[in-house]
Amino acid sequence: MLKSFFGRKEKEEEQPPREKQIVIEGQEEQVEETLSLLSKEGEGLLDEAMEEVAAAVKEAAKTSLRDLRMMEEGRCPDCGRKLHQFLFTSVCSHCGWFAPITAEEGHTIVHMKDGSTFECGTTFDTKGGYILCITDEVVRAKIDKNNVNYEEFVWSEEEIARRRQRASEPAGRAESA
Image (cartoon, rainbow, N blue to C red; front, side, top):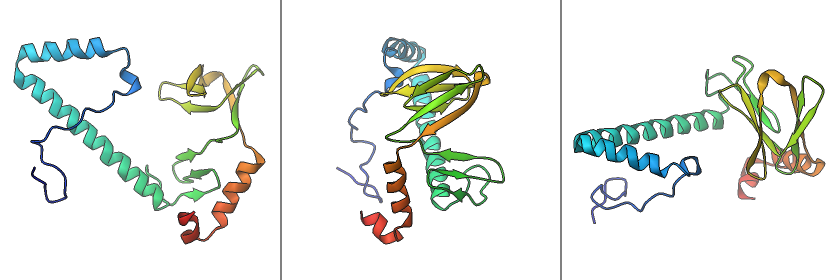
């Protein structure tokens, strides 16, 4: 068993299989069909595709780490300017980037332009122009952003009080709690 400089096992050792992500659940047949097609075309194509996937995963991990580190430093991951910190969000006044934290105990009310409302646990804005409403880890609705007037985040007073208390604690004590 060889170890590299950083204490990681060398490539020769077989890695335990990773748990399949839910996003490909039900698509196992497509994955197998694609792998079969590539392997028929030659081992080189399959190896090349797997190397591209590994490189893309590594690049995404680097980007995620960079963004997290920037936010940890109080900087906007998009433009690098200083973020304004609030109890439940960070906002960049320069480029408009923001990272809201939704209520763990509360819920979200989506107010539609026609006056109706839709309640759910939390929401996610998608690149496709939709808001996904999720309750109990299940997508309950996909709403076109053009139909939304605004989102209301309903917080419990206890959760707000806990967050304020954590924010007012000295850095060393908050980390040890």
